[in-house]
Image 1 (cartoon, one colour):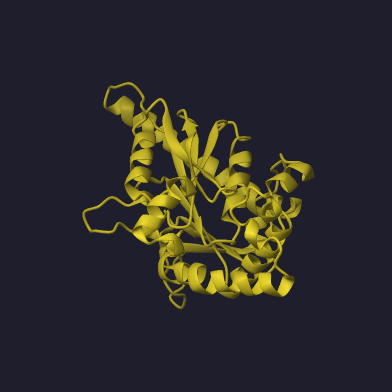
Image 2: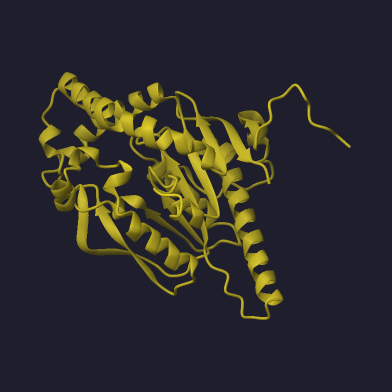
Amino acid sequence: MTTADPTLPLSPYREIGRAEWARLAKGLDQPLSETEVVELRGIGDRLDLTEVREVYLPLSRLLSLYASATKRLGAATSAFLEEEDVTTPFVVGVAGSVAVGKSTIARLLRELMSRWPGTPRVELVTTDGFLYPNAELERRGLMDRKGFPESYDRRALLEFLTEVKSGAAEVRAPFYSHMRYDIVPDARVVVRRPDVVIVEGLNVLQPPPAPNDVAVSDLFDFSVYVDADPAHIEKWYVDRFLALRQGAFANPSSYFNVFAQLTDAEAETTALGYWRDINMPNLIENVMPTRHRATLVLNKGIDHNVESVLLRKL
């Protein structure tokens, strides 16, 4: 019988280095082509086939194992209660800063998990859809705090997830347009009892606002936090802003079209202003403190590659 090394600090997490984690991909087939990876990659991300194979393929397999085990436990519980199996979708939360790459990771996990036999139907919902409409944010004086916890309709998000975890046949979520930078009134994301629902957003691991309230993460079966040095994220944010200026911002229909004609120096100054006045304070005050609530933490280096993984012990 092995015993813990008394010289090592106690932790509820296993810390797994990149090389050790990558070895877990041995024997797993790479289901995505290079073209598919490029299509999934967000602006500024450097995701490639090696990163997919060594980091996200093992993660998707682990998530599929958790989902399948939860489904079996649900069936066993229903059998014990002598009732029909009412196991509900396995819900995965993906949290982290603006520009850290969590949206790309959420899209990638949706594609990878859907390739495993036990989880063929996977849906992705972003919490952007639960931001208050711009008109309501303006009324509340919150436009400059968009992305902070108070800018979300927390009640609506909880109702959505409660319906998902209650086994509702169909659940609808609001749709957010990044082009309009606002909720689209008549558009909806429809979820029809898939095997897995991935919920991606800045503040999905926030504790409840009051002790007797339900936290959004109480309705998760597994959660992932994407972590990186704030100085690295700042660089990624500025690089992404500069890239968007040449792309999406150039569209006349874009809310941010006013930035399309900025010079490089003006664009960098503007991006740094948004980062240091809004996004960094939100990261430090609200997002980073939730890291310890995650089931698994992905630690990224300056090149966007994952350097280590923390996995909560069972």
